[in-house]
Image (cartoon, rainbow, N blue to C red; front, side, top):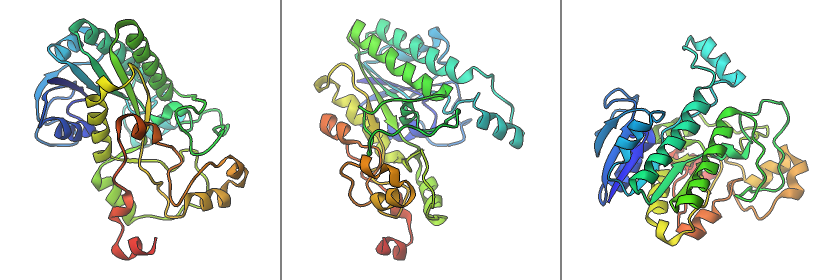
Length: 311
């Protein structure tokens, strides 16, 4: 079948296209033309150049498709104080203060409306584990953890525009699913990492001594691309709408997770559920249960042989 991938010339799209191209015809939709992205690779599909915030461009991108993989987005809160400070320090041009909300929320709305009119049956979108609210804190208050590992039932407590935009996108997807019967599935990845990023992290690894509300979560880009394919291909067996956390089975720590929590946040020990070895603090059990996805890769694959043996 024909599948449209938004953000189609981006980093994750390369791996998603590799997963889908053997069995599906691809339409790659992006405002960045081929060869102008920071990741250069051979595109596997027909490129439609346009903008998510243009309804007409979205219509061109989904015409004839039966499914959409929605990856396109502004990947951080441009109006966050830390984002503004980093841009000023590096001399980068500041994006308009409302760019994250404008592109992410209206882009998703236009895309879903175009998909509805085109008769698209399934939309699988890149949401974010940031909907949880544990990252990009602005108020200075710590993220309120009810239990660990967190899962899809855990309370959300977001503050920033990026996390809010992803939450609103999930609500928009659920509304279109209820109203029009489109099968919609937001996947919530944690820090999608290419191979070279994991290699660099393993090479320079230093054991943290302090707790971090980001929960030391990440996901290998190969696993994430597989999650998109598996969820899309399982859509006829799934309820019309579900959200799923998707991250690695382990953390960015070499220390056992329970031991690290005991050492750095003893107040959270009573909130620990079953947690063995280096298990992630964000559960992916729902994705495994509902469409069979399990993460297969770990950053520890890139540790020197001696360090792997010692862990």
